[in-house]
Length: 160
Ligand code: ADP
Image (cartoon, rainbow, N blue to C red; front, top):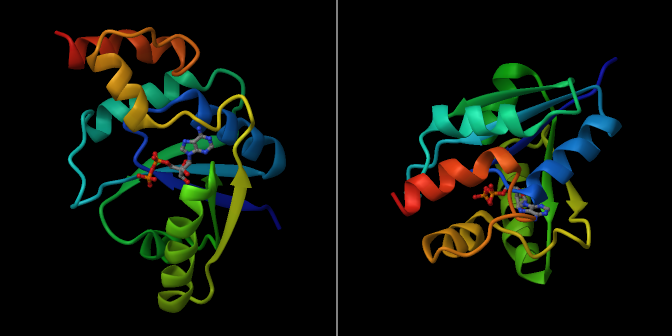
């Protein structure tokens, strides 16, 4: 049986940390679904379509991924698509509590769905979409933080 996994997140925008996780997942699993979660509680900088486009053009190596978006619970997306494994990235200790809570809520509402945590690579563990936006809004250098194709769209959004 081929193993499909879902990597959900905001990806607002995709960073080199996300790219690293996705490339590692594509080497480990047969198919990776990058799921842009349309959160009702988070205000986003990029639209879903823009985020999709930035993800597509940032992944030049792997072929075994697809990008999708969903407005409801990730567990509902999993059930609908018959996928049982959610993968999340773990950076520093601060991520741990949030991920533990999410994994346990998901287990409670959908016991058939398992969560797998993947450690961030040391060269990317400090990168977050939020920090990248902070650098961009203040005119700082974005090289080494986001994929090359994300730099200009980010600058345009935040320093038009
Ligand atoms: P969310 O708003 O759901 O946390 P993000 O887009 O910020 O969405 O992150 C999606 C997933 O990618 C999360 O599991 C997050 O911990 C992980 N992630 C974010 N940045 C990195 C990074 N630099 N290295 C590894 N994992 C990361």
